[in-house]
Structures are given as structure tokens and as C-alpha cells.
Image (cartoon, rainbow, N blue to C red; front, side, top):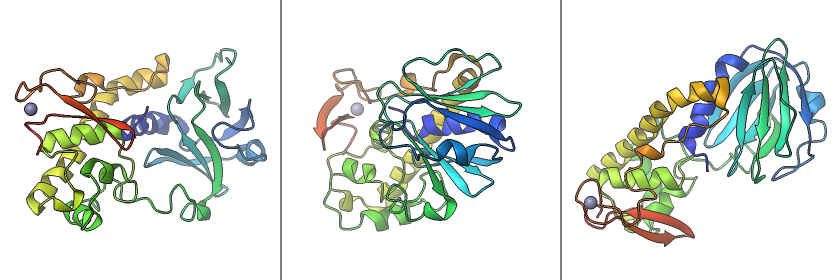
Length: 274
Ligand SMILES: [Zn+2]
């Protein structure tokens, strides 16, 4: 499933091709993906200049001159692919094409259909259920040990669950929470409210480093992604504990454990993480 670094990679890949360009139109091949696509979507985006492409949590926001904002979520299997002048025939999973005036076509493909294509007014973003309770962006300066400590104060939730809670910090998913906790030596099972200030500093730094490293690693694959292969940047080779059950910990050679927390797999080292 694409997480924050993958979505950031997509946004950075799209920016130079989209910002300042005019959308000629959109071809919708379904009226809903995970949720309905607004009926007037194609009409509202046609002829609009794109002001900016941004990421909020795991959503892509494409701001149009009219004040509308195209919302894209990649769900479990969604991809946004830039197609050059020659556009291949759409397959069964190619749900939406955005056509740019004098530019490439952007195709939204999503076999499992957990993705989202939506359109909101700029002023509605702050009240929308998907965005209104979101915590700070982990890569922003506003996200620091003090902010995280305040968010987690008194929490009896397991630390992993607290970090997946989008109200505490936006956009963190299963993979990068596992990786960030390993990096700073904190157990995913400990109560979130028990993390001391120095460890909170380390946790905060780990989250930022884990995400930044993944984005950096995705930079080269992002170029491929926008030009040819259509693949999102995936960073498996960088994972230190995620998906490594039974494999020796890279730091102490103890076998990495897998447990299930709130229905999701957690991978951690029982010796390094306390
Ligand atoms: Zn270890």
C-alpha cells in the first residue's frame, strides 16, 4: 500500500508536469471508485489551470484556478501514471484520464478500487471528514517532540497504535511506523503516554529520518515512474524490520518478531526495542 513517502514521490514527480498547465478535460470510466466521483467532475475541471500539486497525509491535492481542489487517494493499489503523447487504450483498471492542454495525460489506475477521486471547494477542505482532524505533517517543523508529547500525553494506547492515529500525526502508515520505532529503539507495545522526553526527541527524529530517507530513495524511481515504467517508488530494500519476521535483526542478530496490533502486522526486535 502506498504510504506517505510514495505519495510524496508521486507529488514531486507530477509537479513539474502539472503546475501552471491547463486541464483540457477528464475522462471518467466509472462513476465511483471507493466512493462516488462527483457527477459534475469532468465539467468542473475542464479548461482549468492547475495552480499547485500538494500532499496532505496520504492524499494528493491538485488545486485549480476556479478554487476547486481535485483530491486523489491511491488506496491499496492506485497509481497515477504520466503518459506521453501516445496514449495506450484504457484497460479495465484505468478509471480516470486527466488530459492536459499541450502536455501528457495522467492516468489513474486502481485494480482493487480502494482509491479516491473527488473534488472539493478550497474552503471545504478544513471541514471535510478526511482532513478536519488530521494532526501535523511529520516532515513539517511544527511536528516536534513537544507537539508529539502533547498529543500522546496520558495515552494508554500502544505506541504503534498512537502513531497510526492520524489525529496525532498525519500520514504515518504501518510500514514506516514499524521502521521509525526500530530506529529509535522503542517498543511498539509500550503505552504511548510513558515515553520520556529524551526518547520522544529520538522518536520524532526517527520518524522524520525514516520518511526522508525513503523519499530520497524514491527520487530515482520517481523519474522512471513519471517517464516510463509507471511504477511507484517502493523502498523494500531499505526496510530494517518491516516484513522481516524470523530474519536476524540488523543490529543484534535476534530474530525479528511479528505480532498483530489493531488488526495489522507489527514487526520489531524484542531486544533492541524497549
Ligand atoms: Zn535487535
